[in-house]
Amino acid sequence: MSSIPKELKYASTHEWVRNEGDGVFTVGISEHAQDLLGDMVFVELPEVGDNVAAGDDVAVAESVKAASDIYAPIGGEIIAINEDLEDAPETVNSDPYGDGWLFKMKADDPSEVESLLDAEGYQAVIDED
Amino acid sequence: MANRTPLFDAHVKAGAKMVDFHGWDMPLNYGSQIEEHNAVRKDSGVFDVSHMTIVDVAGAQAKDFLRKMLANDVAKLSVPGKAQYNSMLNEKGGVIDDLIVYYFSDESYRLVVNSATRERDVAWIEKVASAFDVTITEQTELAMVALQGPKAAEKLRLVLGDEAFAPVDGMRPFMSVQVGDLFIATTGYTGEAGYEIVLPASEVEKLWDDLLNVGVQPCGLGARDTLRLEAGMNLYGQDMDENITPLEANMGWSVAFEPEDRNFIGREALEKQKAEGHDKLVGLVMREKGVLRHGQKVVVDGGEGVITSGTFSPTLGFSIAMARVPNSVGETAEVEMRKKFVTVSVVKPSFVRNGKGLV
Image 1: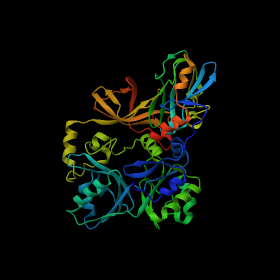
Image 2: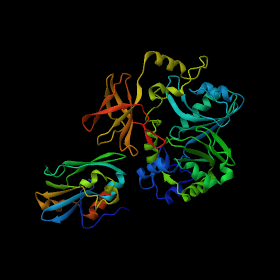
Image 3: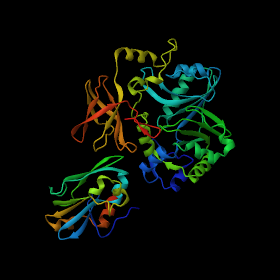
Image 4: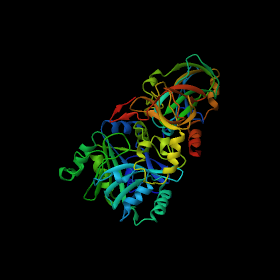
């Protein structure tokens, strides 16, 4: 059973979102998603300054097994990316909710986050797969 | 329910992620596929390959039968225990399966064939055998593990003890020997030194546990695939199948056209194809970010081809692939990846041997 922290919000496409305050949100992929993908070998991240809409494909997680698109869970501006993943993509496997974060966004509309899934709702998505 | 090998419980105990592999419940990995891969390149790893099919061939006409059925010539084998890479073809020259033949005597051989094609293989073997004085025995009570890596010999000595290890000590590649209940061969599917060991199903869990206890890494199908691809070894059903001939799959070296009067099944089709020209299997290397994948389109001087196997190479740190392309190929190829074309290098399909990169 993979861990799904209660304090985070989730997209049905397996991204998680953490509210850092001041309209800033950190985004990563869930433990379940990294487990499905297997050992990560490359992570292609967006550019800082990119403006994206919810649902845009903004990053690619490439594992030994497959390449998988990562979607922006909310709209806004990319304000930081996790550059450590360049040399250590496996951090996404070992610490998906911590050091394995992908990027940070400044939300256009922070209330958009409310429409994402809570831990329980995301668990239900996994159970359906 | 899916078939289980005698090691099923041992895999679950070791934390394996189990997946369906052609009707068998097999371990994909025990945590990290890359760590397992690296263990085989630098130290030692063990794979459960009990799902593979072992067929013994015995009888007065065993040699004649195999010289008819197989593309490589078993008459080249004269030292008891010697192994040979081989394939059985249909009349069109397509590969029914690739296999290893072990020679015991002109009247006794062992074949190890793939699991994915088991029923078709056994039916074909029996059909061809019906015209010969031979007995075909599928060994379903035997299990098989592959112990691979530069420290494989050291680990096996620890487990067997000096006395039992003595007949194996210093054995050259592609040989085999029976040691008590263990049939031990210096063959494998990783490009490293090591052994494939066939033994009674009832004894395999003890050997497995003993190997793990001396620090051998259990390895799953994921690492098996990246290791064999780095070594440039074909995977049946992916790099070749019954519609592909050995000449189109970089297996021409394992087809014996000499002597000319040996009329093996598929010979006529291969000779015709040899005269007319054919596609070939090449290696691709991409040093930029990204991973070459099975099914991607490849463009070379002579036209379009396709990637048959592609992966990230953990040993090299970049992506490698095998691709079937028209015969006219320059030093580079264009691969269509995620809607854009990327230029990659064309190399011989062999990337890593004994822990060292070849490209």
